[in-house]
Image (cartoon, rainbow, N blue to C red; front, side, top):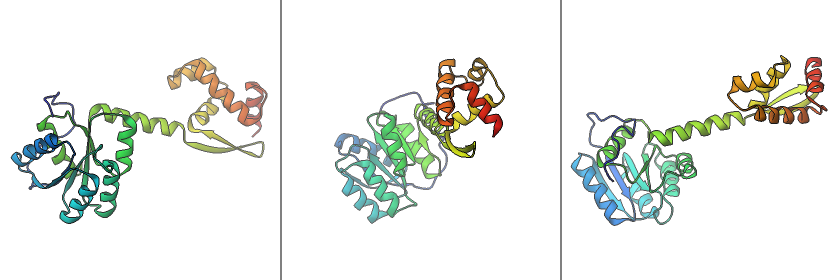
Length: 229
């Protein structure tokens, strides 16, 4: 934990009852440092352990408000998060990570984590993050929040929709459906690209995919099919 930008996390401190915590990290120095910081800040550390099985056992034995789990502990911190979430749904989980890899963050959140913070977080920020999580908030860096938003935006554009053209069902992505509606209006490629803030090449790629799915020979034939439906 070091002194990073104090505005990096969107969390606020405030008066809280003592928050009970279980810590799991196989880095002894890190674990001792976290415990010292939390103890000195009025949080109640119930146990500090070094592996996923120990973390699960400690959580089940003490029912803490929060489990602080390093992602890379022996036995897999993310797996421990999932097990603890299943057994103790009221217990919040914050993952400590050496990296900010998107796939690891998504795996942690999918396992039920309420927060995902870098081990380089400052002592003050860590305390603020844990108190925020105890109040029902999430703890993610601004960078990771932006990545999470982009992920959901991408998933949204890949959502599948089904339409009927010429009596036949046709499955399109959400973005293809949006472009399809512009094709019905016979809007030019440049205008479609401007509306969605994507390149004309990308628009043409979508139109090609739509045309193929409709079984049409070209864009003009696809538009005629749409008008007849």
